[in-house]
Image (cartoon, rainbow, N blue to C red; front, side, top):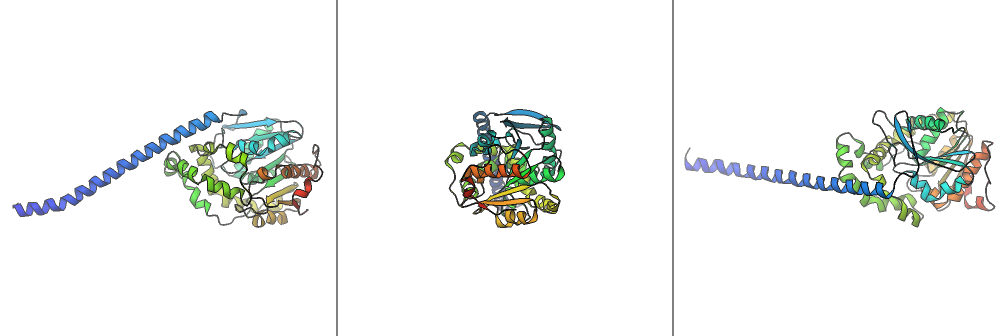
Length: 353
């Protein structure tokens, strides 16, 4: 090979070497960034657990560890939180303390949230969770409960009443999603549930992105009302951004539309009384499309709205929620404690049955 040919060959190889070097440098930098993110996520998750230790008891049901709290005496009342939440949501709202003055209150960390586990051996749709919680309640000697669900928890409450109609006495449904409608958050928030890729995201960048968008999401779920000071200061957001709760939340986001579709075909079967409550300004789940529509589909229901409230009605109007619980008890012929305080019913719009 003459000198000119050798020069041409080296000239062709040099860009390829540079491209390979740049690619390797980029991969090393990306790997280092992911490792740093994973370390930060692990530290924040451990700190969150240290700052928020289990507040209740543990039980094992059908191979699943469940964390729950129980307070008060009397008629059983079960509270089911929404997607991406935990027991503390009801605690911070003040609803548990209010209800425990009248009822025996049982609140679960649903599977995958808080300190409850979520095995990967089954799909955790509303019916699967309802079956698990029904068994758990039986083990706790809970009979004929009133079941209150908020947001995603309303689908589990409805599944309990549909699948165990002789067990559930009445329902209180807060800010629920009941019919299949288009949601931009489904494709955006579902990827952490994807096997392998989702595992990588949940242990690295997804918790950090979640923390960045938390202020916007917080405002959206309370809008048009301001975020309550207690929620802002006390809700342990990093407990929900741990990898395992993120998987549960992403999976439930992915299941949201098909779950609502399947349940909506069974609403005509529901026979237990239900009180439906929602904020009239909810921008997260449209109240007219969902809560008002459900009221028309349920012959044994009452529908109430909280004026100028958004999705988090239990934080914005806990006493109105208590009035709805008392009404659900009365509709089922159950003792309702002290009932509705004078003037309390004037704080919401009442649409009857």
